[in-house]
Image 1: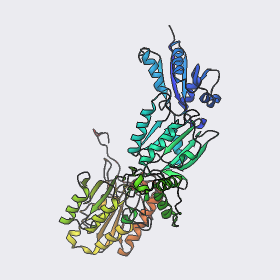
Image 2: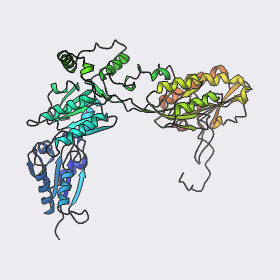
Image 3: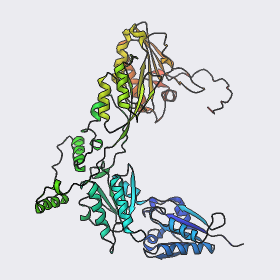
Image 4: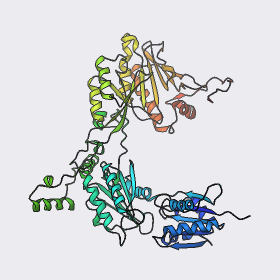
Length: 552
């Protein structure tokens, strides 16, 4: 019986042995033939043993794919290699095209396995900082297999759409005009100060990294081994790193001791320069200067003229028109719309929403946002917005208490029978001010009851506080859900009111510092056996329960 061959199309990453996958090494070593561009073969030479190597020049991709298929059809195991990922401007598509032309079928034809690798957009981004944190695209400037007119249209579309752009194959010895034309197109839509990273031979011996901007990028060496990463309108530079925000604003941090900026301050332009309103005329350099000024508390560096600005000034003098009159590029400086999440309530003890508050909720949420009422008498808001600070100001103007959501401290308090037991309300308010909203390893719910009836179910929260006979009782480590659910353990009675806030703060701080990520308080209590001197006690023995249909 004739032996079936197999095709491996192997992406070996940037070229450093440490960044090649185990599966890629296995495939290379079990192959009979290695076929690839000669420079790529040299990069993996140390991995090879006695395989037959077929190497060709840079523009001979089709012939390499045809030879690989021919050898596989002769019963050989063949590895076709690409740097980066074989499916990103690599050999995977060409190999499939050759197979399709020959009528290949997966069930009856030679086997094929595509082995992924780290593409240049990923390896280069890791060296530049975090430039590809939002929507991005890759564009090859090589017109060897794609007409230049089509490439130019793609560059223009990407520039208009404000993608972070990674340019592959930007320039070669004979192909020099494409990168120049690409810069010209991009400058129609982006600030000349847009950060640009040039990475040559990433993770190889001759690695070279340059951080520049869109106007100055052609002043540096750019060749076939260079990947050009161009930021979007929100990308900024900090300490020679390119950073593109994710554009997802979520949490408040209300504790002034841990977070010196309160919510309405934290989201102001001065505090988050990368999320500011990005209108035409506000250059990326302005963002950078704002960020440097904020984080170093030093004066922003004096802005220097770029070559682009000097050229524009010269043009205006020759033409007798101002730069604004002679050139008005449609700069894409889009506002970064983010999904802003927070919880609102009338207060710690107050459960009564006013008509003004309900009208304000409808106004800020609008048609695109959502409101979700929770059992804790809070409403969770999810609002796509470019102005989170404006939303917080509006909500605070009608008296809402604003809280973060997620893995934070959440305090819920009963309504104290419309204030008849008002003696304990101030302690609930003080706890909220002290620890409400601070980050935790896992969500931490504190229940506060104003009398011994405990009708607000404080004892089934992580920390339960019950006001009884002028003092407080404390419960720790409830498990509120699941078949093994149980209330918190009563660990203290008769706590003096003056000690309560400090005690709870210490418990929360201990848990925050020592718990594992995602470890609920009851699990932490069981593991460490003691919190602030309060000892864990095993709960009653489990009873046998029939397996639940849901598997819990």
